[in-house]
Image (cartoon, rainbow, N blue to C red; front, side, top):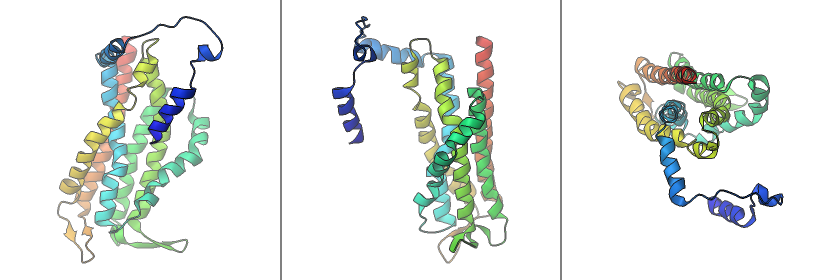
Length: 265
């Protein structure tokens, strides 16, 4: 419904900038087949295609906020988690720290900012190693500001917050870097593919996250009387370490890709 409304607003009210300013400069008209051909040609560019694949690593890890983390909480921390409260840490961090991060690190080259963001999101997974080895484990209850929370909940929320910091460094600069890869005059076409890495990361990250929890992290788990799983710390740790390693590997791949692009220039 929102998309339909947006379409109607643009269709009825939007005017091209040259028309709005009263300019009469002739515009180049492109046929639909020519536009579709350009979309295919963009994907034939090796440097562009490799970038889409490499940047998918960030979104693979990011996707676990909505896949593996909820599964982990529901199976090991609490049976009926309020996931909206957990994931609210993401937009809260972005609203509170966007201007601060931009002011402090806005002058970083796009590729460095992207790599920092991927490293942050990878390392955020290691936070969850802490409660696994603490007395009482992830279900140990803590009292904070009059609220009783499982220990695992606190660290999952911290993970989501750290992922949001990684997103602050990564997301906007990803579009900037993608624009710099585009041939002059085709920036809009190339930016049209900007969400393709998100789609790839989601398609792969969903099944992979479920497999990682069920086959790796839950290996040797014991079912408690409450219905929750008591994970073997070693197996659970392996899952979080694998996610962190994939994040760091993605960051390294992005840095190596940038070096490859610079050598081609």
